[in-house]
Amino acid sequence: MQFDLSCLTRWHPCLDQNDIMPAAWAQYLAERPHLEGTSGAISCPVSAVEMAGRDSTHLALVEVVKYQEKVDSQGYRDATARVRVLEHLKGLPDWQVGEIRDVSISLGWSKTPQRIRPESHLILIAGLGPLREMRIDPGFGCPVISVSETTLAQLRRGIAQDYRQDDSAMDNPQ
Image (cartoon, rainbow, N blue to C red):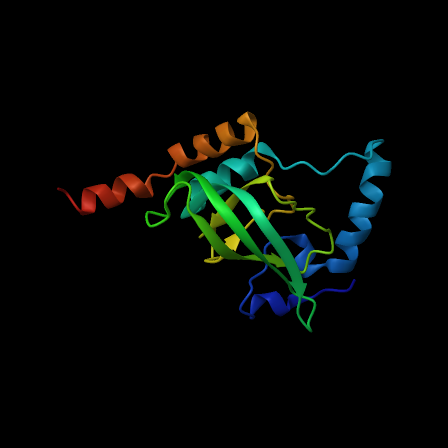
């Protein structure tokens, strides 16, 4: 029963169960493989990946050139990544394919290491809900979205459901 409701009023908002119930979430993660009879990684439901595609303002497929994590005095985890832009998925009009950028990535209070390595391909997400900074996970208790044909298809299905793009085109007729 150790709740942490500070994320309701701080700069970094609540994203998942771990933010509000860190002790219970850690216990759930520890017991889940035993309950399911497998020790596999937690997968993200298709709906969460599609929601990230639909509801995010910016999405990019990037290759990690360099990655470094840090933890502040309150336990909040951030990372800095030097990434090469491989593909614009949504938004980011000022990012060029092939360009190398340094980005700050919010990791929250997650105790689960992300295991990001140079040369890995990631999806960077920004503008999902109240979040404006880049993230490597969509929240909802999901880990990093691994890049595969399946997850890219799920993201693109979500992007196709974003009707805000159609509304902005109607607001600014050419």
